[in-house]
Image (cartoon, rainbow, N blue to C red):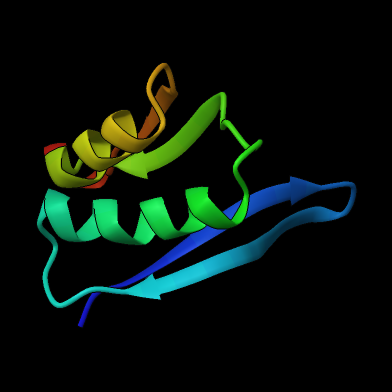
Length: 80
């Protein structure tokens, strides 16, 4: 089961603010977890999100939090 952790910056580094499990890694499942977080914190609108290159994750974030800027984590070690 995929585990997603939402981390937020603090004055001493990043901490996990929320977690959710999904039955798969499809965008609709990830959206469900993000919508729950959005309901709990209706004023929160992330300006930037760091993610690996996952269309499902990016699509889910763009749907739930429109206007979010993405920074993608890329593993260049496999490009050698």
